[in-house]
Image 1 (tube, rainbow, N blue to C red):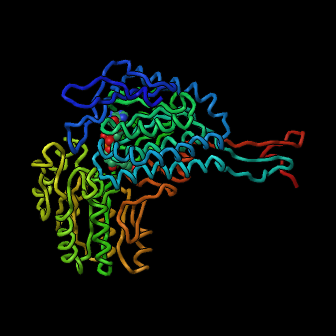
Image 2: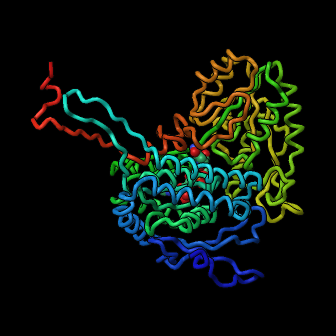
Image 3: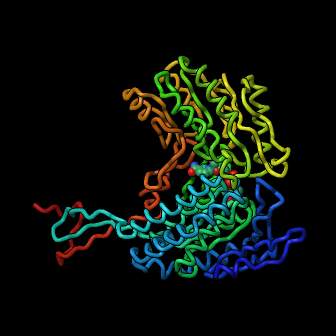
Length: 512
Ligand code: NAD
């Protein structure tokens, strides 16, 4: 089956055959009805076409939804432990394919190999976790208020689920959505980000190879502006899950609401890391570098604001900037590289525009700020790790999600001041505090307004079995990961079994 997707013509000017990837609909790899395709290029070297993908239209979306609806009739009746066995098998296959898929991901997304291996591993972890859920999917049994009556609640699947994913975690995020959905008995249509479809294809291909029945998972590649609406508005779709920007979240949320679809939105972040005077500075600097420049700052949980208490402010800034200047930028396939390119030209332009905004606002630029486009960088979307200091928390660089390697360092007086600065923002995804004082740690765990708080670790590093998501403009209250995902992809049905052989009226017939 895998070979079907990989046949394609030689691309002019290229010495190797460029692979053409087809949509996966109803268990078949098929071309788009539009006849159009788009290129997926390597952001570290845009001369390389990683693959050619279908630029799908409404007809393709409709075909995928119809296939998923047909498959749902059977899949929902497959016992959950059997459904989970396919997911378990896919985990085992992903382990064998991990290196190949990590390299594919670095080529299409740019992040360094260490991180793309982590991304594939996250899909493996999610698969093992969700495979285990197939033998749980617990619901409550509870005493009835009436005699000879049995009461329980069971989880039921919703039906066809539509998933729309971003480019920064192109295998992990699709796995957070697809795997709990299918273990619960749903069927899926996924539209991956146009910048990174290959990694999602690799995940879907693995699920297909592991034996997922036809129609249970369908993948349609293309642009959100064209196929987003047909996917979101289709009456057969019962749940919609988006990870993406707050702007697209608003569109998806309002569209889904019109037909009362379940809707999970995981959106932007502007995550604070607080460093108090008593912190282990070596640890905080290490964490701030990893959180700020890992994935080139393109994580929803990126450490984009570092709030430092005045007693250690100067030392922290000096040492942090020195280390940031030493980070090696380059092609993520080189194991010595610390930071890869921006995902595309538009994102790089955004990153550079925020450098100008920060300077105009009066923040002090002390590291980076420039595009790298000479020598080894000439064919990619590279930029220097960038640090602003003495940032006022009200400045745009401290309030808006940049999604690039631009860190703002903000001075603060004490923990109370730091928490006020941290919380005074529209987002609320991740947060962190470095201190040795357990009292302060617990106060921050209570008071930081965010879905995730780390103590003595940066704002990144979520594990798959805990809830993942945020408050305020970061989402609409749902959580991915852990049992929250099972909650989203299932619906409660309460069941009463009366074995008294007579009419018993709840609230009315009250036994003595
Ligand atoms: P994006 O919002 O531009 O795109 C996300 C997805 O939505 C893509 O697949 C895109 O094609 C699709 N889309 C675009 N317009 C659409 C429309 N009108 N209707 C339906 N779908 C549409 O985001 P991105 O640039 O791919 O990813 C970066 C954003 O994602 C950042 O804001 C980041 O914070 C966020 N993100 C959040 C989390 C989280 O869990 N909170 C995780 C990763 C990324």
